Length: 438
Image (cartoon, rainbow, N blue to C red; front, top):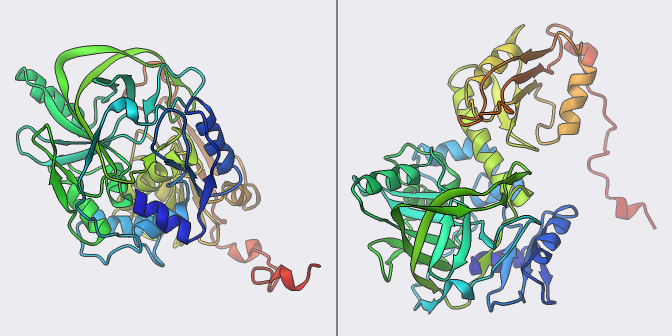
């Protein structure tokens, strides 16, 4: 993470905060305020109660995500499919070589204790990447889980029921055994993005991180548990999930924009904390662009993979400005093509496709204003929109708040494309205003 900070600073993509900030609300407030103005990351040099500098807003730029995976002229989805399908790749522009330096011991309480939202029950580690091994096969897994600070010896963690880590913990618990895991704070972009991936349970996200970086990751042994972690991890918290123990965790402001109330969740017993010299802590405001852009990008890539194998003419997929929407850009080839794409998209990822919109190839699918312009100007509002009632949403949605689907074919009427040709002002996109304005 410290190398990434230097890289962002060299590119003019890093804002600096020199004054001391309070980790309770103030740090998050500054990060969110900056996101409204810029896609720059921000480095807080002085944070109350800790010696560690904190960087935020690292992953809030789709353009930067594309650069991190070496997309070049391709879309994020196209490049992501190459990486997740295991095809050989060139290294991304940012792929520093890790130096194996001595790691310094500290305590959990020495780390930044950041409280993000007004009703959060305690400080949380929100960029928390857990590394664990399948207890049966030894395959390593990476995944994100919010982690509530209780004491220097205890975190409380929501594993969810569909994550591979939850399966690992359940199998270890069935044997009456704890599950060892390492919590990585301040990961390289390759590791962070690999942890965002949804791979088959037998595939290794560590291998994927190596493909993103363009080289196998250098690993080192943990101090107190039987695991290896990447050498370039800034901060590593070692420990184990206790079997048959759950304790209250929450409330917490989650990525959907509301609070998850207190619930009994897993207990992680901390056995060691180490950091690299000069380590930088990564803060992440859940539900902010820093959190949503990576989730949107990998979700869009998952939908893109399904569509590419199902219908022709699919050019790109976006899940912005919220992961619950899917916007598909196509090169239309026949009457009804847009509706075929809608049907395929609805079946691609049943958890998240609450709204599906299909547009022509000239529409910017990363700009919802442009997408809605296409819907509002290129045909009827009624016959091009479909409401599908009582379609289940999240796997665990007892109140059915995420049931139902809205589907919109915002493409031009077949055979009448010339009537909807988009106007433009020649040269407007290339004007250098400094040559005109005083």
